[in-house]
Length: 431
Image (cartoon, rainbow, N blue to C red; front, side, top):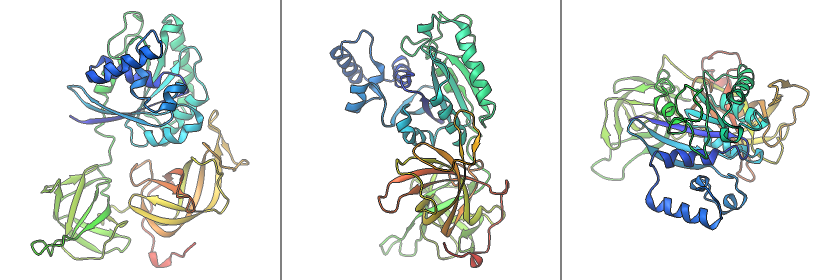
């Protein structure tokens, strides 16, 4: 079975945690001791209905306030597919947590309260899903039981969202009216909405096609660790360990090590300690090479006919996480795949208005939860693709070198709109 990673999104109290709890509960993915603890907690709180949100809201502060603060991951499986769910917070203060949970998702469920409709956080989270190149999105119109399951309410919200989403880059969008509290259209089809002829949420999750989501075209292998066993039996073994970030590698393939530019061939590939005929994204693997060339952590293995872009000047669309605003010409640490270099923000090109998606070219002050386009200059070259082409090699984070806190997540853009060849390293200066 394949694995689907999904995330919830939406504004505060739209029912994200309750939806996940309902999905787990109705699909019989809750253990008996978990169910007993849930019943006790619901009884202690004096609530009438089983509080399914408590399945994911595990922090004391979350239970006291009734909101999600941190990302909670839950795993479950059906006979057709395995799932990892990221329950993310809806409060604007915790947008950074939402970005973290959504960064690896194949599908996003954006919830909307049927009573309030589309709000700013709905647009913000949908825009972030578009930036993160999440290919599948389900707009779940929740709490239909509170609007008497009226079809026109769902249609109005779907029309509003469609107008906004027409400016986003999300290829697959579906609309689904549900009631997470009562279980309508979550696992079982609702008899209270006969006008809706679509599938249930679980059926959509089980059948959505994700085979083309990963990049199997561009071979990329960021080196995480060089393995040199300290034993007489394996004294001549030198393996490169890491996670395949794109494409397919096989023994005998011609490869190039970046940034050095040395060429060689793949000798062997290992997965889970045993030899394998091929390694592809997102497998973790160990690679041995025919020639003993200089390679260390942070280098990247690619194929000579399909090279990543190599540059010190990088254009990124950044989501700012820190309450400390971006410092003009500020110096930060960039962490990209397994490589870490220092960088300076050379320019803020513009900021995005979340509601209108307009570029604010006269307001370039980037603060908490702002999204803007930046130009970075790194101290050493990075080997990367655009985020649109490869989510693994096209993403990075900015770290405050003094506090070691992550201040931003960045999606790399092509400066000229197309893939550029590697530049000569000898011609590159420092900061």
